[in-house]
Amino acid sequence: MKPLQGKKILVTREASQAKAFSRQIALAGGIPVELPLLEINCSQRAENLPIWQRLDSYSWILFTSANGVDCFFRQLEALKIPANRFASAKIGVVGHKTENALKEHGKHADFIPSVYDAETMGHEFLRKHPRPGTILLVRGSRSRDVLPHLFGRENIAFDSLEVYETVYNKSIGSKLTETLDENEFAFITFTSPSTIEAFIDLGGLPHLLDTSICCIGTTTAEKAESCGFADIIVPDEFTIEGMVSVMGHAVTGKD
Image (cartoon, rainbow, N blue to C red):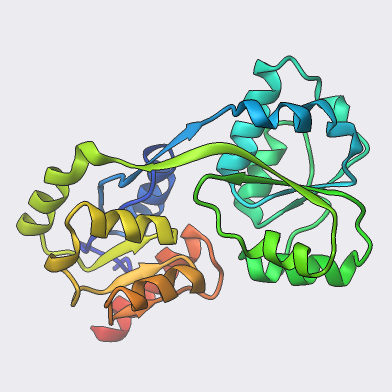
């Protein structure tokens, strides 16, 4: 029998990314229920134009999400900036999903941390590249300030380029409450602190504080714990595949 056989699992991540997660859950025998709590919108900000115009001045470009990669290249195209403008820059990514998004645009990663979070990314990057030159951080509107704070403390020259906005999917609020009332979930899954914030803002918190939740990494788990969730599991590898694996182990361990 498959490890998640017949178990309902709530998938809360943004719609375009939820499908891949749901496929992994279904392959493990689970029943995914998608309720995207966030929307990702690529955004072009007028104050960023000087950064786009000096792309060739950066020694490193660091991406902390696949969304950042996709929106960065969309805006390159919209601004008619050739990708060879930053051909001399090296590229760092937070994990393999972000690396895969980069490969779709014909680029490769020169740096990937051993653990897929901003803290590890920053510290390992500076250990390997203590004098990296000027860095461009490609970020979203809700990106945490771990890397900016670290680089600021270490007097590393950097610019931040916000290329997408993450907003709550307000249209799904009533559907969330209805879904939680009518289903018994083995797990609720969260892939960022923002999904937890959206879950609470859209009315989900009173329903399921006692339900098991699976968080993609320690930062998301810390947010869940601070919000009152108690039964939290986290994979060793901070990926959706890792989440499916740890949920399967949790189910088979209970059976």
